[in-house]
Image (tube, helix red, strand yellow):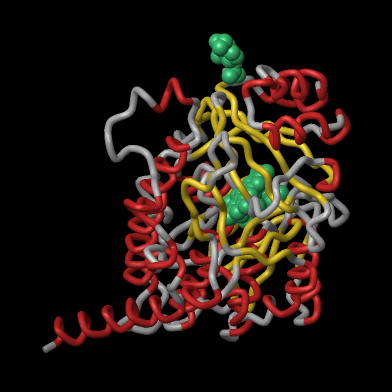
Length: 427
Ligand SMILES: Cc1cc2nc3c(=O)[nH]c(=O)nc-3n(C[C@H](O)[C@H](O)[C@H](O)COP(=O)(O)OP(=O)(O)OC[C@H]3O[C@@H](n4cnc5c(N)ncnc54)[C@H](O)[C@@H]3O)c2cc1C
Ligand SMILES: *[C@@H]1O[C@H](CO)[C@@H](O)[C@H](O)[C@H]1NC(C)=O
């Protein structure tokens, strides 16, 4: 028998953005959960994250948004600039008037620490230093049983895999799926804004286009005194040891991003001049191929966030989509009943979520094309490159499909759909 009442105990593997947000969303709906995180509590999560209205609406509903505002930088648009510093396109990440919220940029560390504080305030248990090793039993009629690398075992009515792109939970039922390297390396650095030659009325965040492609300039902290800057390079895949040694080889990263320095517009050259070795970093773009299923056969193991659909970073939706996943899932779980059984609800959730991720992948592909070097762009067919005229000139709110969505409303519709079907089948 599949579950026909809300689960009494949910185990969440992974205390990242998806895992912590899910625990809070479930708590609000009176469903108990426990979070198991592989890392230790003092792990330092680097980097900034961009959150858009579709996710902020959910974070608002669980009481997190207000607590983030003074730690975050608010912004609406990303400007595309040509080599004469003219704006060629505007991409909207948020807008209070059109989409209900400004976009925010926040340090991952701040976000996770605020989430953890909220979990602790609600006495939701979080176990650090607890890496899942194996799932020992997974059948529709019983609790899921699982073991950690430290030898401990546990069980729960549902097991949620919120354990990121290299998910162990996923490997228990989809062992053949491996993240794929996209061939692109994002090289980045953090610089002081005061050191840059930014033209008046330039507008940030921006992508400055030059012969070598696009160069990103993003205000990083609440007072915008620091900028996160960087560009992408085509790069051959390395193994884990190779990536680790590249991470330490700051000089190599520095040299790669300084190649053809004089081909860039002046503002980019000033950013390159302001870079320091110690703050050089990179992000190797891995993504998952579309999965045949986000659910184990019993439907008692469910993947969310990057574990289910790690997507390339170009439209900044990875974290935002993780939050959408868990909000809709929590709502559906709270509605489980004989008409809205777990197997039907989970399947419906999956099909709606997969469809939406595909739309975001299509947009990502057009945006990626926009940031290619001129020589590469010239080879592409018409329509392959995003422009705000064709798709998303924000004033018209063309991105409403992406940002003006309330996942609990959506999930309510899905639950209703299942009830109607059940009634139809009886009548
Ligand atoms: C440099 C960078 C910048 C980014 N910028 C943006 C952005 O601006 N906007 C955006 O929307 N997205 C962004 N993303 C993507 C975003 O970070 C991810 O989509 C998001 O973090 C996914 O959340 P998650 O909770 O699913 O996975 P993760 O954040 O990866 O969390 C997974 C957690 O599971 C834990 N874990 C792993 N294995 C186990 C195990 N076996 N047992 C227990 N725990 C385990 C991990 O330690 C980790 O804490 C960025 C990503 C990177 C790398
Ligand atoms: C640098 O310029 C040379 C000559 O134009 C070109 O072949 C090479 O691809 C450029 N490198 C980058 C990273 O743009």
